[in-house]
Structure formats: C-alpha cells, structure tokens
Length: 158
Image 1 (cartoon, rainbow, N blue to C red):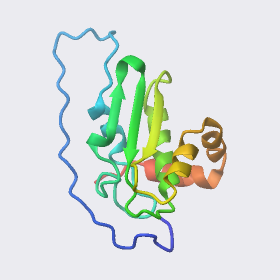
Image 2 (image 1 turned 90 degrees about the vertical axis):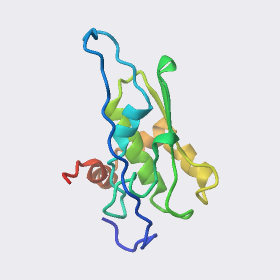
Image 3 (image 1 turned 30 degrees about the horizontal axis):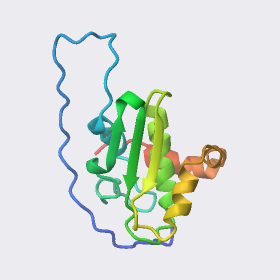
C-alpha cells in the first residue's frame, strides 16, 4: 500500500467471531430499525489499514468498545487507536472511518471520529481535521486520497 513503513512490525490480533443479529419474526418491515454499537462495528471492522494488509480490527486500531451510539440523538462516535503514536496515517484511517459511515448510515446521523486520548503525538490536530466538514470535503476532492480511501474500504474476500 504505502512505501516506507511507519510501523514495520505491527502486532496482529485475532478477529472476533461475528455475532449474528437476532430479529423477532413479527417485526414491522416499515418500522425504523435501531442502529446500535454492533451494527456500527460491523460496518467498520473490515476496513484495511493503509499501511498493512490487515484490517483495523486485526490491528486493534478499532474495537467494539470504542464505538458509541445514541440512536435517539442520531449520534455516533468512533474512537480509534493508531498502532504507533507518530502514525502518519492517522488522518487517512480517520477519513476511511468517516467515509465508510457516511456511505452506510442515514444522513441524519452526526458522526464524530476521534483518536483515543494520549495515543497520538498530534491528537488534537488530527481530531480537529477529522471533524471539520470543510477539511473533510477538501480531502475528498483529492483524487489520490480518494483512491487510497477506496482501496482501504474495498471488500476483501477472505
């Protein structure tokens, strides 16, 4: 993906087994379906790291516990942990998370993407960049960056 690796030997963890979502048989198909932590995690768990051939889940960049959802307020927060504190790909990872959720969730949702406190050297700057609509829009006008994001979001058929 990227030459000159920042973290040449990341720790790779085993992926959690996917849990099946249970749904009662007498559900109104036209009713609004609640969006929960598990659903959000399922949307983002397979995003590939821009630097390694592993998913963000396998690198523990994201965990189910780092996803917060308030469906009543249409609010989602994902907190991610870069593999190293000087990770130059933190903004790309955050952008991938934001784009995936923008494509997956109804537009009424406010999505907040954050670097876990104390896990990145420029945490405040990364958080500001990832949650500024104008900066995100400008980033998504850059064809090279969009290609990198799309590559990270492309499904892997393992």
